[in-house]
Image 1 (cartoon, rainbow, N blue to C red):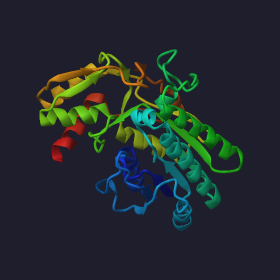
Image 2: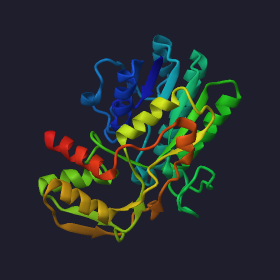
Image 3: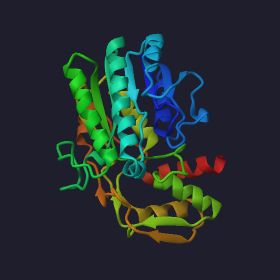
Image 4: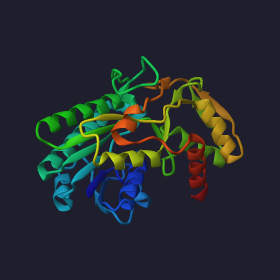
Length: 307
């Protein structure tokens, strides 16, 4: 199968590309190496064709015409909640305008399906735990709003005769290659700083809980979605909530040392509790997580030690 992965040099996207290549697919990557996006040349799989493009660029259509993908895995995005609150216009430009450009290029070139990276941020503060896919979407950040809008646009394009879609709503993805310099990705940030002996910052009271899912498991969900669950929206998470304070303890234990903690107020857009139900993923994709949080942290620590 010919698969084009937008954001395929980024943290999550590069794991997906590696999984697709290992499965024998013909893969192309679109990435613009945005400084805040995590895209790195070192993440590129040498067996994948590469187009250095912004997803908003009209030249994206030429890449589609050249590669002729059968499926698009759309992972290029403005992914930071903090950046979205500071610059909601830019967030919408990338996450909405960019997605429309991808969807239109896909429709024109005869792509059969788009697998879309959506987010837990589309739910906002949950009314019940665990959160299932029928839970109301009340996003509390511009990022969550644009990710929800992306789902609606894909429904529109599919209904208008364009590509089918599967939207995967991710929990908090972590693992090797995650950027430790940004404001997102608490596990990568903590691992990097503790290895360097630098203090870590814990916002709020540290008791906020999220659903942390390993990048390799997310990549496997994308592999399964290439040919399944058309028209569906699926949570990708573990069903287990872990607090920031517990993450600190587990990471310090894995590294073998601890550092000072600096406390800070709650950030705008942060959600206190987000844990996913994943029964639909099991039923529709045959997917469930295989890497525990403890094992995933150990792999992440080993990766950062190797740099």
